[in-house]
Length: 136
Image (cartoon, rainbow, N blue to C red; front, side, top):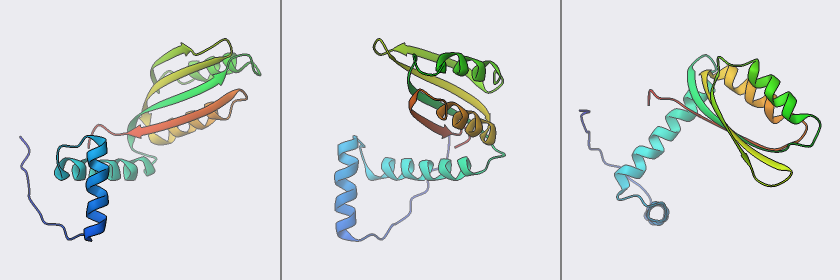
């Protein structure tokens, strides 16, 4: 079991009131849980800047599968990166639109490069890469 350390924080009263409202809306039980989450998020953001670190990530894309052979190009990119791609899930939103979630693992630089190449394909309407790290 990890050891818990208590520490004090000085904070402006109005900022604390805003923080309390925000964490209440998000469903946190107490400030400690919210602060731990903020610290983890900050550490993950720092790790994602280190391109030589191994990370895990999700890439969520929304695209029109009728545009510019996007489906063929997407499949080709995925087949060329089987070492980074753990799994992908494909959902048909409507006649033209597909949503795909790709779970990735590997060096951050490779994950970001693959995500950028996918997001740049003609027909991709939106792409969002979320990088995290299991060591946090």
